[in-house]
Image 1: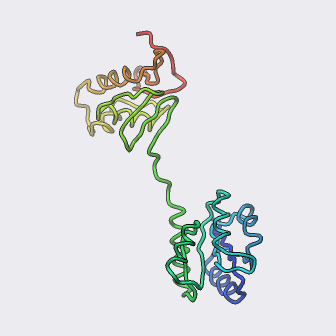
Image 2 (image 1 turned 60 degrees about the vertical axis):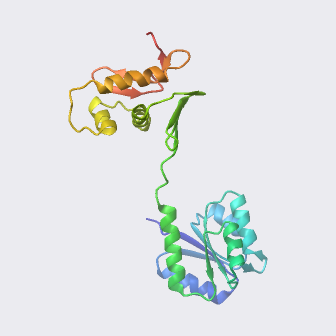
Length: 235
């Protein structure tokens, strides 16, 4: 795995060298800029994961540079360094888009721990979407509502749970037993037609104004939420 690239933007040569040597020894790929002039280009082209950004630079304010990064849509991690320890100064940096803030003088071990924490957080899996869209179907997982086009489907709790399972497995044929396990919690066949009944309820509510259906019965296998199988109902 490629080592994360860290860019140090610091005009104090001793601090820059100290950080560069320490972070390189920890396995990071490190480069240094003595001012902010090249920051935007370096972040855009060099695959930088994290910027250690001094607040006071010869050619400008680190806070202003951070604002420019965020305005340009950059999601690069920014750890800001400053000799200013007043609370309002820290808040200004954070509100400008910095991810963390370390006050000089600092212990290298603290700065390293902050960097590691930021990189772990950045590498964490993205949260599951709260709204799922499929064709003209919209399922809001937080509000527990579903629409087809502009029409609210008015689902019961069980119907919603069934639709959620189907939309999370869209385009895949799911068996009756898979549905029983996911929606009703059965790991055995209770010899009931409950799946068929609720699929019929759901299919009726989901039917488009033109009679088109997203939910298909795949004979002998199960059910499939499928855009390719979209077709008017003959019922």
